Amino acid sequence: GAVVSQHPSRVICKSGTSVKIECRSLDFQATTMFWYRQFPKQSLMLMATSNEGSKATYEQGVEKDKFLINHASLTLSTLTVTSAHPEDSSFYICSARDPADSGNTIYFGEGSWLTVV
Amino acid sequence: QKEVEQDPGPLSVPEGAIVSLNCTYSNSAFQYFMWYRQYSRKGPELLMYTYSSGNKEDGRFTAQVDKSSKYISLFIRDSQPSDSATYLCAMSATGNQFYFGTGTSLTVIP
Image 1 (tube, chains in turn green, red):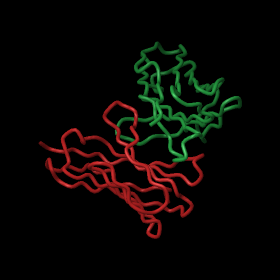
Image 2: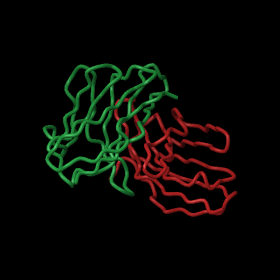
Image 3: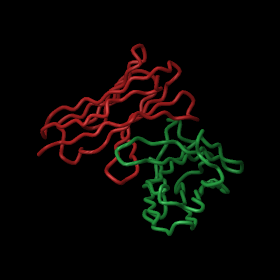
């Protein structure tokens, strides 16, 4: 299956600072990437859909000015958590769809643990 | 009503047992069905993919889709402790939006 890489896997930042998480499709070009947040023992919560070369589509309730998403190339999307606060601490996961994959399925990155102190 | 319903468990079985995991859904337009396995503190890993109705087998795993009943299943034969994880079902109508179950936590006891 396709490979999606996410970096960093863990990051600790101070309250009020910004942190960037990268999501890369390693062996395919992803026109669409998805960003999720997951709280302990809960399912994935879709935050936004990122389309290469255009603005991300955010889900209701997700602050677009706080969670900046950039999808500048077909293999890279980034999520920047701006002015992070302890309540932003969570597990963030990206996924990508391989348009050449007739299976119409999505592949996930390894996830990034963000801790805001 | 949620698009996808999945019993969160937890489910605990002895090693070697057959495990049955299920999801129901409400949108008859769904035609792409996936099962993901997620270990603690890791991203989900694609296990099985099925298009439309029918069965698909891969080693110890069998995925079934019954579109008439809007019901999908994942069977794990000869379950192993390494199968202990959370299993997420996912589905899509067009491949542009994906809907996930809440996940079922499975523990296989040696």
